[in-house]
Amino acid sequence: MINVEHLAGYARRMIVDQPFWATTHVHKHDHWTILESGTVEVEYEITAVRSFKATFEAPAAILISAGKQHTIRSLTGNVRWLCIHTFPMGSDEAETLGITMDNALIAEE
Image (tube, rainbow, N blue to C red; front, side):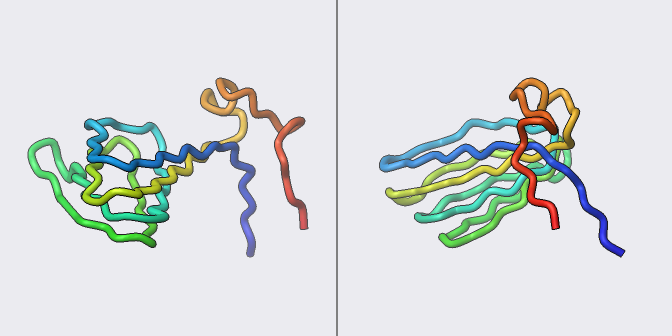
């Protein structure tokens, strides 16, 4: 059995050539982050009173879960950080971005 989901999405790339600290923030949906170059430290909420810190060196793929606070700090220069956000077609987020089934690029088998 194969399930096919039609998702809308966008990607945001940050390129950092100096010390950088992305303050604590939360997303509504799970998203993947691709560390293309450099080294970062990610602090990730486990519970309201416990967090986890990990260091990632490129190349790396990092899953950020919905509703979890996280903070990113660059540890080197030349950090390229690509966040890939997807959400169901018809969702508020897709509508905000103006993505519909009519204008989405969809590859059908």
